[in-house]
Image (cartoon, rainbow, N blue to C red; front, side):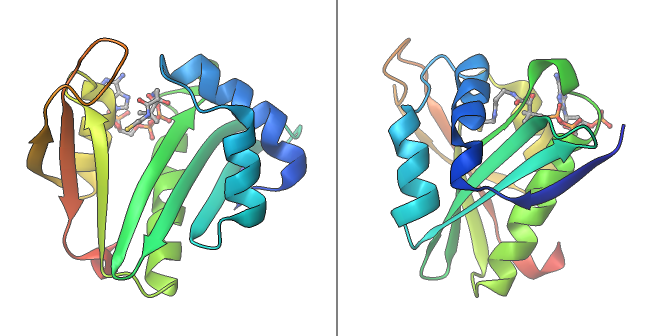
Length: 152
Ligand SMILES: CC(C)(COP(=O)(O)OP(=O)(O)OC[C@H]1O[C@@H](n2cnc3c(N)ncnc32)[C@H](O)[C@@H]1OP(=O)(O)O)[C@@H](O)C(=O)NCCC(=O)NCCS
């Protein structure tokens, strides 16, 4: 399946928010995505789009001094395991290098093996645990760090 990665626009937000709701038990309210795209100068937002213009993936990262924080990342359930997550994360990390960040950090649910496998593939390492971080089920967050962003 062919798809491209491009910057998220305000017009994308309703579909992106829908994709977020399909992907997370604690989803972001739609207005949060509007804020990220329009107002948050630290945010870098991308979507994956198919040839027939369907948005099938999204990522939001924040540039915080040296750090690129991966704030959210999701692929539409019907389009998973086709390399979209890998591609959109690559874009976010390379964009982070362009923006001058030197390492990447993220939180992921302790039980989210799919995402942790993806992150490990990029060289992310577990560096900590945030106990009972997720409010819906009290699940821990694993903190993962990628030291050498420029290696991507
Ligand atoms: C995590 C997620 C973004 C992965 O997207 P994807 O497009 O399916 O990922 P890719 O096809 O690029 O997979 C790349 C690698 O990640 C790992 N991976 C992805 N899904 C996996 C799964 N269900 N089980 C185990 N490993 C998995 C594999 O190593 C995979 O490589 P392979 O297919 O060659 O074995 C997707 O499952 C998703 O949106 N999940 C719900 C939201 C979420 O958890 N986001 C992360 C929040 S921190």
